[in-house]
Length: 110
Image (cartoon, rainbow, N blue to C red; front, side, top):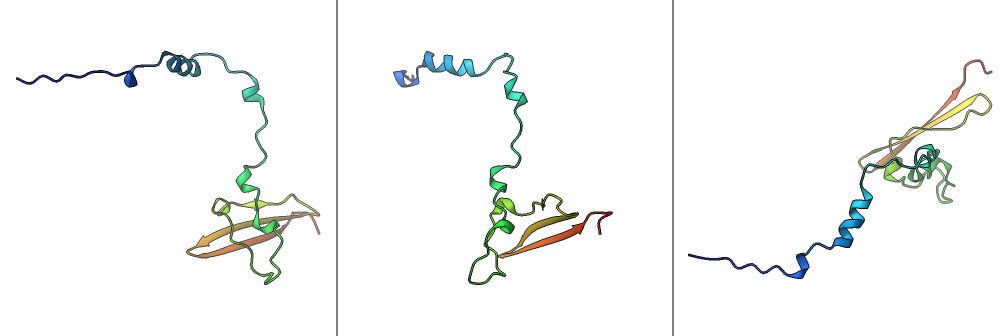
């Protein structure tokens, strides 16, 4: 017959201070109204770097810098100015990036 002798050391004891702080994080309480009345950010920070707004390199102005991966397949549009709206999207195929820009006149403008 075999007996397994297990000695519990202090490393595995529950720390009451840690448990109390964890219990305080969760519960049934009413959150502050300010948590819900804040305005959302106008645009996520990683989408603020649009390659169409960057200064073109001096070597070859036809080439744009490589876009960030988070900016791919997002439709960007400018505010309507002088009756024209500009839309742009950047897509990737393998190692190539293609940026398409659409210029659209608003109906009723000359």
